[in-house]
Image (cartoon, rainbow, N blue to C red; front, side):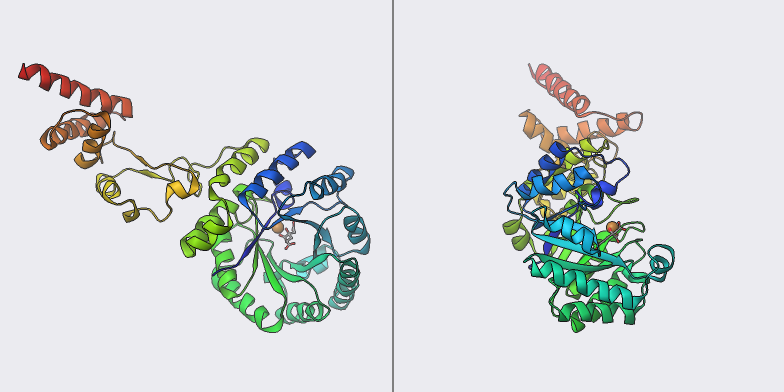
Length: 380
Ligand code: HCA
Ligand code: CU
């Protein structure tokens, strides 16, 4: 899969995260940090949401970033007009099509929705802006309804259509099937948006691209409504594994950590310990068997090269699963004059002690230095 684009929605979906209260300055900082990663689009909260939101669209549109700026609005003429006046490059419009949303949210039928969509899209296009039309809760919408509305908007020249798994219920096979079907009825680009309630947000994004989608929505650390959406870092990790040269040429992967740190502190969370790429143990190797192989050739147990992401690998040795090859490597780092047999002896000591309590690297170094000291003393 090559040639996919990222619509980064930290400043829209991410603002729907429980802890997110972004000032204008913070949004600008996040926007610049995302631009440094090289994401294709930034999606901003609707200017109809509040006065600050409207102003933020203007401010971010005028920063001169490489990324194109979108705002996300309801499928309403009023919202569209407000958005166009902010200077954004395009609008992502959305309307609910599932029976839940039609019944319990806006109460409109499919004919009304289709006519409204055509009116709003035609208007936005007449102003020279990009326009994406998406159906909220697509996976619980009627397939015939969906395809007929997508066909209708494709015919009038919509820039992209969008599929949204608003409740996080979809699985990769369903996503692949729906996108494949949609691919065969529209000629425009296809954007996909996946919530992560059941842990499929990255896999669904990948399945969508396999099915012919062109654009994926992400947010930094996956923040969004409830437990969020496809995380930017996780998607980039997945795509790196699929097509490393495309991803490395297009995005600056060493900048992911910076934007994650900015966002984590802005929304008062820590980067999860098991986060893709930047989690504290993402490049830590522990078991002796792993450590030995890693020291010979990192690819044995690493699909992501830490240095490609500006990270470093760590081999953990102070525990009962350790092996003498890893200990021997530490001996070399410390430049101590110890033989393989010496390393094996110290390894045995580490294992005995580690059965009682965890050892720090400092503890291991002390064991090695003491052993070395005793040995050199003994020989004089
Ligand atoms: C929501 C809307 C949305 C929109 C997605 C899209 C969703 O907050 O409920 O525009 O494609 O998940 O449906 O984020
Ligand atoms: Cu969403």
